[in-house]
Structure formats: C-alpha cells, structure tokens
Amino acid sequence: EAAVTQSPRSKVAVTGGKVTLSCHQTNNHDYMYWYRQDTGHGLRLIHYSYVADSTEKGDIPDGYKASRPSQENFSLILELASLSQTAVYFCASSDELGGSAETLYFGSGTRLTVL
Amino acid sequence: QQQVRQSPQSLTVWEGETAILNCSYEDSTFNYFPWYQQFPGEGPALLISIRSVSDKKEDGRFTIFFNKREKKLSLHITDSQPGDSATYFCAASGGWQLIFGSGTQLTVMP
Image (cartoon, rainbow over all chains, first blue to last red; front, side, top):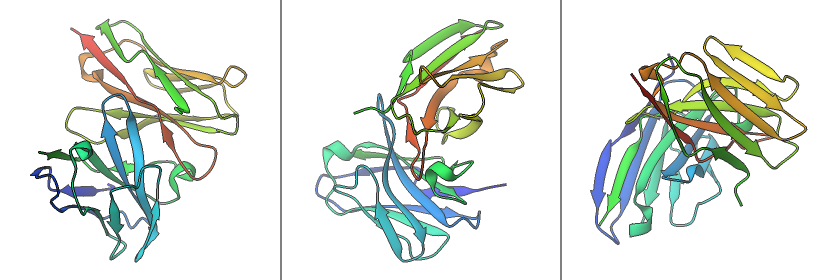
C-alpha cells in the first residue's frame, strides 16, 4: 500500500526561527507536493517536485523553500518562521502530475505552531 | 479567487439519512473531479471521483452527480453512518494542478 510519512507530527517554533518539515514516500512516485491546510481555505499548494534535485513553486510559495534530495524525500523549509505560517502541512505523492493523477497519496500531516 | 466552492461548510445528519454535499466550479476546462475524505488527525484520502464525460458515479453508498452545464456536482452519502463523520473535499482539475475546495465537515449523529 502507498505510504507517505511525515515528521515531526507536530512542532512548536519561535518567530524568526528556522523550521524543516520532512516527508518520505515509499510509493516510487516521481511527483511530490507540499500543501498547507487552514480552516476555511482547504488545501493550498506550496511547492511540488517531479524529479530529485528540482522543485517548483505552487500557489503560495512565499516564505517557503523546498528540497528534493532524492526520489523518496521531500522537505519544506521555513527560513524565518512567522505567526502566519501556523497551519497543518501535508505532504503528498503521485505517479502523475497533480491534476492528471488518479490519486494523491497524503501523509498524516504536521501541525506547526509558530509563537 | 476561489475556483472550487463547497457548501455547506458543515452538515449534521442522523444515522440512516442521506447527506448531500455540494460543489461548484468556475473553470469550464475542468474535467476531473475527485472527492477526498479526511478524518481528524489524518491526511485526506481519495473517496470517489468522476470525469466530465459522465453525469453519475456510484461506489457503494457514495454517489457523485455531475451537471456540466451548471458547473455543479454533489456527493450523496446514503444510509449515513457515524463512521462517515469526516471532512469532505471536492477538487477539480483540467490540467496539471488539482484545485481543492474548502471542505464540508460532516457529522453523523447516532
């Protein structure tokens, strides 16, 4: 079965600090995504990647960087965390790009609180 | 601008009733519409999907009705069970990106 694991499950960060969220998939999928979930906004795409060592901007990339060191791993980096980045973050993978894929496989999420 | 809209924001039904979740979209090029189900503390998971060439898709107690002319679709959950209590996201795509709605939180009372 498809598996996407995220770490940590939750994190408290201080404003201005650096935060790294990690994602690992065992699906052998080329495409990986980072989404942000806020109440009333659904899921919004931050960054995605279709191959190792390459990342692309999604709809809301400001304040975030991404890193894809291998096919299995995809990280989201907040260099200077801000209060407005408090949210739940989901990583996902698929065998085709977003809208073409039959299924996105999501991890369980990371709840980030910035104080 | 929100391209995929869902209503209601929250819905409560009794066990055994039919829950109806609504979704509308703006972009006429959208042709693939999956619904994702999310339980508290978990990530969304694909529940059922439909392509614009069809007007109905059924999978057990879950049915999507699609109206291309009005750019509307709905998810019907018949014989609702407490285990169906979750947030349901409608999504749409016409190309590379999947656009998600803001979700409907469904509560099924026993």
